[in-house]
Image (cartoon, one colour):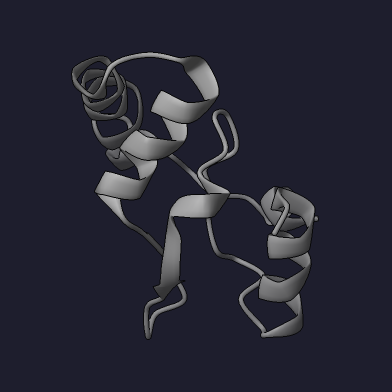
Amino acid sequence: MTQDELKETLCYMGYDDSILFESPSYTEAVIGISSTGQVCYSYEKMVDCLVNEDCITDEEAAEFIDYNTIRALPYYKPSKKDLS
């Protein structure tokens, strides 16, 4: 499934406010939607996405995710345009 297809599916299901990681895209790591409408990702699959797409090691991918994704979550302010 592509990023656009995932966005379309979420909108169709009524999860217009759900936040998706887009750069990099972890579409293949999505494992579900929480009861509050949050997109749930598998950390291991996120690592695999980076390893396969960027040809880096597991350790480099984990460091990238920890520093650039997980650490930034508290500062992310979603907007309606995220799924439009």
